[in-house]
Length: 155
Length: 155
DNA sequence: GGCTTACTACTCGGATACTGCTTGTCCGAGTTCAGGGGG
DNA sequence: CCCCCTGAACTCGGACAAGCAGTATCCGAGTAGTAAGCC
Image (tube, rainbow over all chains, first blue to last red; front, side, top):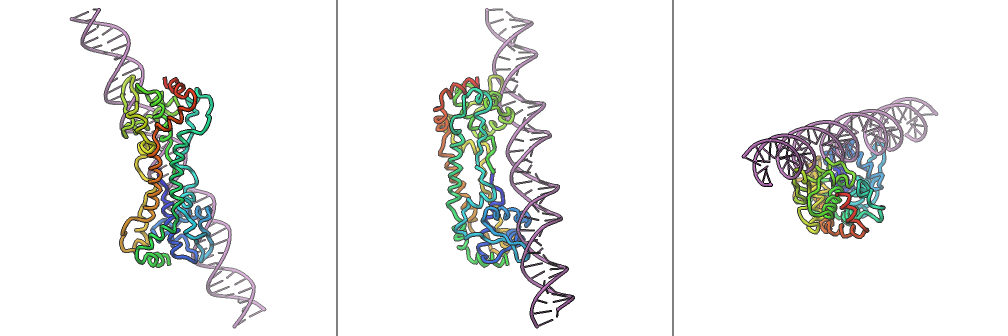
């Protein structure tokens, strides 16, 4: 029960694209920047394109570029783009099955367990939605020569 | 990326044990109450025993019983008992690999991405820790004849 | 020389194998209870 | 009548398979740039 590695890859890649700015960058260079398998990273980036976080251009000189500035991209956007909008807890309504399900009259109202877990789920999503990638980049920019290193690694 | 079904099963089973009270109940009856595979539910309950939420007694007339009252059991206790204390996001330190890792001098300080995801993780865990099973049972007790149905289903 | 055209190289995008974890099942160790035999 | 012993039934506990999502890889469709050929 943990997020896939694609989330980490996507966040770092989006940050790198912001640092580079301007023109599109191919998945091969983006993958080499962090030693990732290019084809698999490409698959993850396609998810980001579907979610509207990236735009892709085929052909030579093609690649991916940010669809909107980092200020308008939250961690929740990235997580939902990679993982889908599935909740952390999925109620299978076992309260309506087995002997209790047979004896109980009807599933009146929402499942209390589901509601409680849903509250925690919302807390997680709100915390994710409250942090934009721009804030993370601001923290990364404190390290000296950060932008310079990323640009030269992706050149 | 979602919690295993064992979490849902464990919560409902703990609530049922509280309603029944007193003597131990075998995994077979607990499973029949919700139409679950008995052997697999037993496996989950063993995790709860290891975590100190349940006590088990072997032999005939044996089974599981609550180790402490519902007021002292939070949703976080159950989730960590089943899923382990792994975080939702696991940083693999890709910032130290690939071309950027070669060019950057040293991994000074914590990874900003990991910190941001960790904040959301803490929000989730705090929301889980803030809800006890006693509160959920109080909500379930509103439904008429709830305790009666559970007791007769587990008799 | 300038324009058209065919070609090459490079990109994304989806279809195709592989791996690890969640899920599910099975059998053995241990304990309680019941019943029979002996004192 | 009371106590002891043997057996059986039932429980948990851990060891052993199956299914599926995540992981990884490969090849085809499409495009920009280039170079050659023609006007």
